[in-house]
Length: 345
Image (cartoon, rainbow, N blue to C red):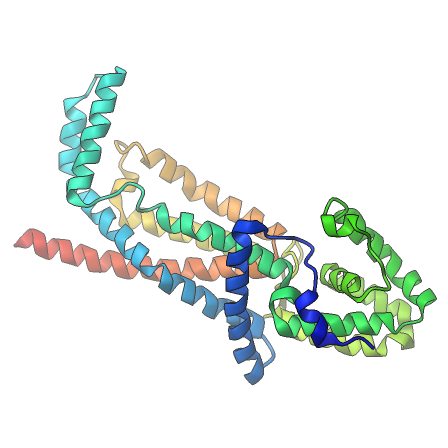
């Protein structure tokens, strides 16, 4: 029998996050693992999903100062609209490059003078991109970052290796070949894949779907009793509201709920943002057309991405949107009243 705990630190991942995203993934993996362990010690069911929700709240709180700056800049831009319109009128009909450059310069100087920034709305999204990339690797290789999942996968691999060689190869060979074909360009597969090595079997375990395990257990019969118990634990750890979080959401039920929720909340957040910032809907605003386009393209993009990504990532994005909507509403009301009081004075 292999020593499960001694192997955890040496477990290989199918996908490597790289030199830039890797440290971010490691840091977030440590934070997420602590959250998961805290929740899992009190209640094992749904801990993975609950940890994602709390983790998302932590990320949104860390980004909250940027949200405040973004909303303040948005209201300043609204207050500056008459001055911006004067600059546009000044250069109306002048399409030569020099005039356009001067107009852009004057508008930038006005924004700078009043503490507004056109890039303010993009900054929170840009900062979230490396977080999203890192979370993709975290959920794609959850057994590397989350101790409970890693221990469970090693125990499953041990149980598989306890099955007689002939039976093991007959039952698992089709899934092993599918795994090798899917990742044949990865360095770790190029080095060889061996169904007698626990680390290689762990990677296979992380790649197999629920339907695959149903076939395996059916073919193993009485030889799969130990494996069935470990798979029940795996399902309990990785499932949140009946949705497996470490595998692709896909188009089937209930996984498809995640892409639908990700797309719908993205649309709702964009819609509310536009409603609370009239400048985004102003036809004279050069960015209005792009903003209107994003209202439909972003939800579709996030929905499609969520289908092909681990469901845990889609859950993170959905919860992030919900928290973002709440922040947007609160900050918009606050700054609207604040600027109205200052205007009254």
